Length: 102
Image (cartoon, rainbow, N blue to C red; front, side, top):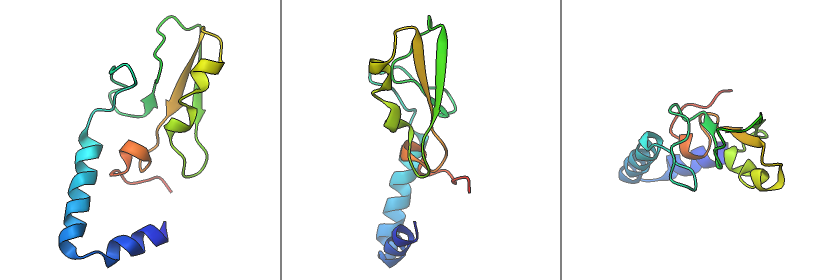
C-alpha cells in the first residue's frame, strides 16, 4: 500500500485530482452482476448469480487485500441450491474510494 501511496504522491497535482475524481465516480456507481442486476444496495454483498430459491447461502470473505471477485466462479462449482454471497469490504475493488477498515 505504501508503494501505491508514494506513486500517487509523486504525480503532479492535476493528475492527482483527476485520479481522485475517477475513483469517486467509480465508488458512486451502482455495481451490477453479469446479468445487469444490482447487487446489495449498500455494496457489501455481491451476488454474481442471484438465486432467490437457494436453500443455502454461502457468505464468503476474501483474504487480506482481496475482493469479492475471487469468488466469481464458485457458483458454477457448487450445487444449484447454494447461492454464493461475496462480501465486498470498503477499500476493495469497486469500493476503492471508501476508507478501508484496518
